Structure formats: C-alpha cells, structure tokens
Length: 225
Image 1 (cartoon, rainbow, N blue to C red):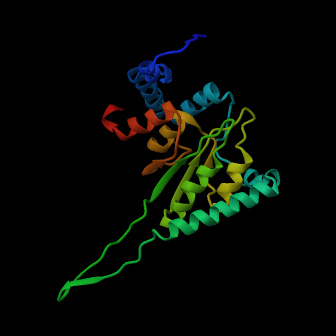
Image 2: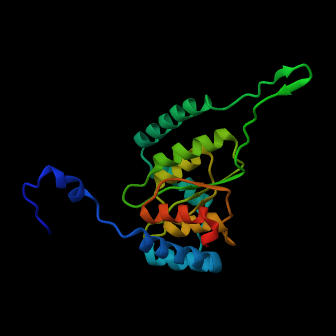
Image 3: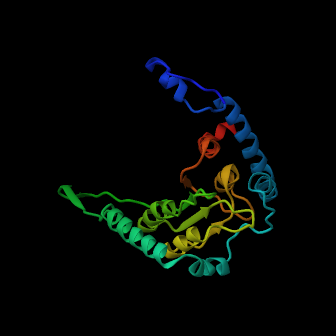
C-alpha cells in the first residue's frame, strides 16, 4: 500500500487516476479472444466461460424451466419494484414511437418519415455480485416497443451455471426468452460473429467493464479481425 500524506492540489488528478492496463495491451488480449471465438465458435466460448466464470457449461441456453423457476426465487417486494419500473420506462419510451404523417410538399409529391426497427439486437447484461436487472428493463423495453423482431440476451452464469433469478424474472416479464449464459468478451464475440448456438445480431447494446467495452469497439472495426 502506498500512503500519500497532504498532497498538493496540483497532484490530485494524477493521484486519483485509476490503475489500468495500457490500451494496446487490453486490445491485443481482447483481439486474441475475439479471433479464437470467431474461428472456433462454441468450443472456444466454453473454454473462456470455464476460465473466466469458473463453470463448465454444456448448454448455454436458459431453459423454459429456469425462466419459470425465477418466479419463485424473486421476492414479492422486488417483483413489484420491477413491475413499476417497467411501467414507467414503457410510458417514457412510448412517446418516442413515431407515427407516419404524410405531408404533401407540392401537388402530387407526398413525403413522410418512417422509423424501421433493427432486425436482430443483442443485449449484454452484466452479472456477478450486482446483477443489473435494471439494464434488462432499460434495454429490453425500448427494443420491444421499437418492434425488434429478434432480441438476444447474454449474461454471465454463476459458478453453479445459473443466471441470477432477478435477471430472468425481468426478461420474462418483458417477453424475452432467448437468453444465453455467456458473459464478458465471449458474449460480444458470439453476438458479433454468431456460432452454432448463438445467432449473429445486427447491433449490440449494454454496459460492461474495460474488456467488454474494448470487445465492442473491436468488433465494430471488422478490418482489425
């Protein structure tokens, strides 16, 4: 531990910087994993899930039984809070749904704006000690309202190979049923490239740590892969 006593104000910014790996180091580590999964698909995802999440999964897909079980594992108070949040988020985003309003700019010329939903979207939901079921609401509700036909959710499993029940309950409440027990870099790779198990999506949404963020940036720069 390094102890700094009475530092001058000019040094505060430097002292308060979080320790981090260099961007080049992180990008290379992430790039290696992305390319491995791009080449080896589900087999590589299993290896990294074992390495990073410490669980050996044969099946990544959350079963209907697991979804239904979440109803009994989430307490009533939390359920009511999630339901209230869903209702509020729906009210807010419903105002963004556009209605086609044709305008005749000159005789015989009619113009209008049209919003087209993204066909396939991937939602990444961090898990761990603080599962962000709120993120399921903030991403899933707008996607449903927008009319996205295929919504894929990825979230890391715990060491028992389970997904936090609050995440599953929230996903089920919204109407999301395609949920995969995949986290971190490997989830971004699976959604970006597609595997035998996980479908490729058109756009990926959701927060993540340094490595997840780097993975999203790199898959957007396909010339690097």
